[in-house]
Length: 150
Image (cartoon, rainbow, N blue to C red):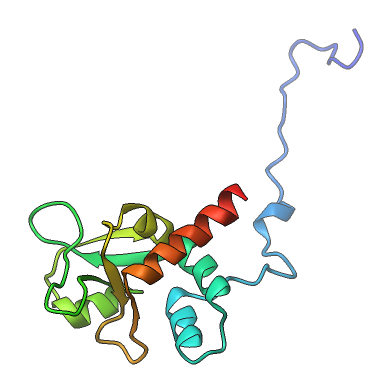
């Protein structure tokens, strides 16, 4: 027989696994996208376009305080109702306290789930707070739909 050991009593020996290429870090790692906090800072200072901000927002994690019932907590003591959201757990804790309840979703999910007529504020207690009123949210949704469906 070709390719088989003719001696039935021979023990097969396996070579130990070698340190493969896949275990080594790449020589030129892909640049990571800016964090949502970096994007908020850049957008509020005018160094990031609205379209670029929205692309980063859509894929970023957003931290939302929550109550006993599922859903967003809204602030109604503003000109229009807004929902506080945060770029990090640290920012959320700064606003709502150490023991506060929260959930995490992506920016795209925020745009999908936000009730009509509501805006949102990112990093309410942060140095670079940003407010999107209900009209701005509608424009963000329209932009996302055009990008997705043409």
